Image (cartoon, rainbow, N blue to C red):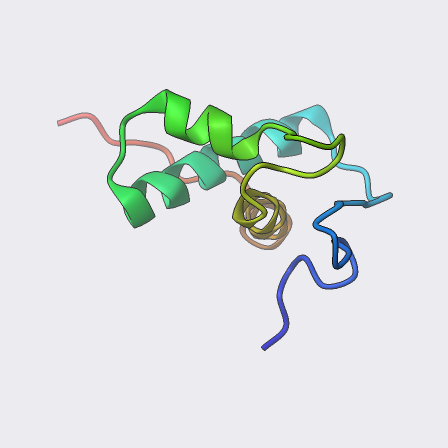
Length: 90
C-alpha cells in the first residue's frame, strides 16, 4: 500500500519535501486534516493535535509521525477535490 509519505520521511522519522502549495491550499488542507483527525479520534482537545504535530526531540521529526501522513493526505485531498464543502446552516 502506497502512503502519501513514501519518499518524504526517512527511517529516523525525519520529514522532507520540496513541494509547494499556496496559502489557500494550506488553509484548506488544515481544515481537511483537522476534520479527519476529529473523525478518527473524536477528540476536541487542541493540545492533542498540537503536541502530536510539533517537532520533538529533533528538528523536522514530528512527535507523532502519523501527523506528517495526515498532512500529506490532506494536501492531496485539496489538490484532488478542491476546497472542503460549504456548511449548511439549518
